[in-house]
Length: 149
Image (tube, rainbow, N blue to C red; front, top):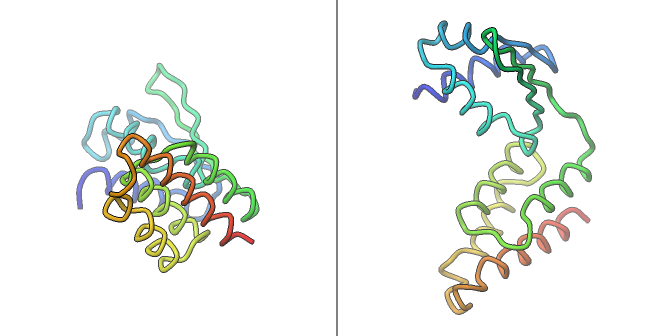
């Protein structure tokens, strides 16, 4: 297991029975044996609003971090994900969004696989490269709206 996974696992365990946890960045870094910036990286990449988390931090004095679970209904969460896609999305970012939707149980693995199959670079190769990401975003958003209905 790599260091980022270990950090994410420890934080997830702390949140197992609570919707909110406060940690000292330096203390956690010392416990794990890493630099505090590694903790920041994990928080920025794994504990995001798209994954249902709100992270607040304060610098200085070891820095405290408060991580909270965001609770919202399925429709609100799905609309947030649709808006996060924006006007254009590359294949890699699209895959990340869909993985997050599966992780949040807003989308089935089957539906995510079908969407990825429909908007991959191989399928969109006939679209001009400069328009490809805009076309992909439009298709993904329409498919997600259809699945939400």
